[in-house]
Length: 79
Image (cartoon, rainbow, N blue to C red; front, side):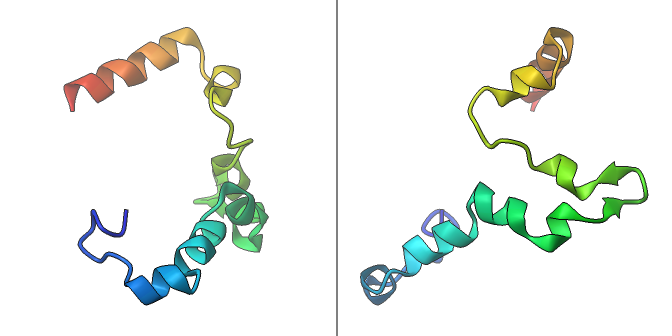
């Protein structure tokens, strides 16, 4: 991703484990554990914790109806 954004890691950053450290900091487990994502809400409506579930492929099936999934698919096809 860093290379795609035009800021690739240097050889030293790779050698010293910078890539792995960033990957750990950005992991679903780490993000779910942050206080800001466990508490609070967006405009008093949506809990911040709602943005993080299991982080497993296919878990959307437990949260979206087939019609909701179809609607999202159609929106993505249009963009």
